[in-house]
Length: 259
Image 1 (cartoon, rainbow, N blue to C red):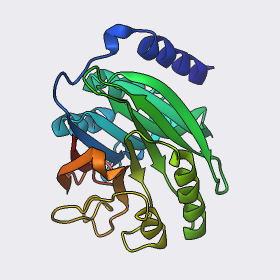
Image 2 (image 1 turned 90 degrees about the vertical axis):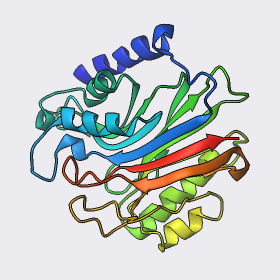
Image 3 (image 1 turned 30 degrees about the horizontal axis):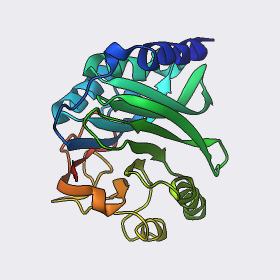
Image 4 (image 1 turned 180 degrees about the horizontal axis):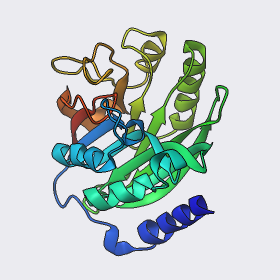
């Protein structure tokens, strides 16, 4: 019941409340972040959602893709994590559940300060448990066309992640507007999955240490933000933020200019 209340809260407060729809004015620069938050449990073992919000606020983003988000679960004190993060970051929250979990739900989240026009949840090829992708259409009043953004968390085996990557391509194959996908791909840059995606998507290189996992000593690059078509975007910055404590992943930051 609490999960349905949280879902109703989103529908009423975000889609039905124009006052929450802010814009980027004339600025066509987007700061996009992907962050696996591990349900706000840090490398110190402490559950601290406010710390997660503080990390996000320091990055000053326009769009945030979040993975491993809890909604009303017992293990995270029955908190609607996306609602709280939206409140503490002053951004609009969207939650997309993979499946019910521990009295609530578990899935992906998106935060944005750009007006939301549509929301979709796509089923991805599952592992032992259901898996989804969360898509949101955004339209700023100064943009000529909307953009679609999709948050994902791919897993488990290489074969399963490849099937999920192929489904992502199928979902977005007919889009002619700008599309951004962000999340935990659980795949290194030289993997078959990322090589396959690079055939249709731009995958920016990260400046400096590209490792995103584990947060205290990152040696694996498995978090990405990818986009297409290339003609709509210019990469201004691409880096991993140095945040070793708040989660077991570090956030990846991509600054884009819409052409």
